[in-house]
Image 1: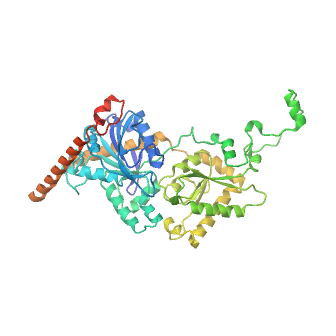
Image 2: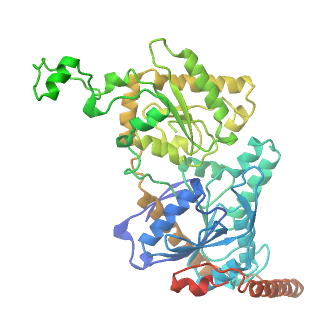
Length: 508
């Protein structure tokens, strides 16, 4: 594996020819996640892809997270715990560490522990590891205690700019506190995998270290211009181009001749046209400005709607009225809180030009002026500040400029078609799911190597006899409480699994 280093941001490239056989041994991975399937969002979609890849490659895994109603995914057990739904997002919960989790980690004996988006449940697991509740091998220098740190190969993955949401929802004072807390949590693991170079650079500027890139992929069998659907466009109330097999309306006389098998006289062939065959027909078709994503405040939809209103007012009289379609699940991507922008990648693969903000994630995917347009930040302002007040002049100017970028795509059909072709050819280049998920496995292997090197070089710290006695007593009492709690769960929780090889592990 070779590395490209940008400051402390490391982008890893797999090199099969130089990878030893021992480095390719199958791994045992314990995954702790704040969110699980069947809920659908960027985190769970990525986790689902990772589990599918691990199964295909023959690795073993167990997943610990919120109670989801599912016991398995891709043959791997999903072990749940109780939580309190969040007021703003009832689909998300504050999940609580369950003693069973600790026992599973000890008995599963993983090669590496992966904490997905540590913020609440992940924080509890990290503290439990420091105290030695998951086994001494997961404590710093095999020496349990709060503040000691975590030992062993532990990695985290960064998916969401959660601290930014504090400012979005009217609590700007809480954002710096959340950034310090998140940085503290990620500082306890050996490395943090984040989805894009721009996100890694942002995190580095905030004091995060040992960052690695864990990108995403796109399934070209699901996303591509070949999936263009006249039926779906009709359901949106959009005039559609007829299917390629029925491009022309015949006069009644010609239609009658064709129905009898008589071929009418041929006219001279048309002049060559370098544009697609249905281009002229599409000139009379309404353009859809499509947003695909969660319909929620932090997605900056107010600016999109304001910009679309300006777009409609600027439409020439001879151009069909454009349509704005919001799907609850983006050729238009006005969000600035993303870390990657999965649907941006899927839109480009589908041949859709993307108009978005010059923000983390999106700027890594959209080639400004070739596959779409990116709106630059106002001078001296961050997006969260510029767009905080929808009644401000800064917000209005941003909406006007975003509308101009939309007009460049919507009203110039030839330029739009060129961008569509470039998006199809260039947008998804280098983004396969196999490479993306195998990169995470490479990060696991790197963490194992880092932990081995640290263990060989470390010298256990020495405490005063009094401090050591107090710490050992605290850990001993906590261990008794946990063991008693585990016994009290006996017979209460049972994961209905048909996999006999994991029956012992999952028995509560």
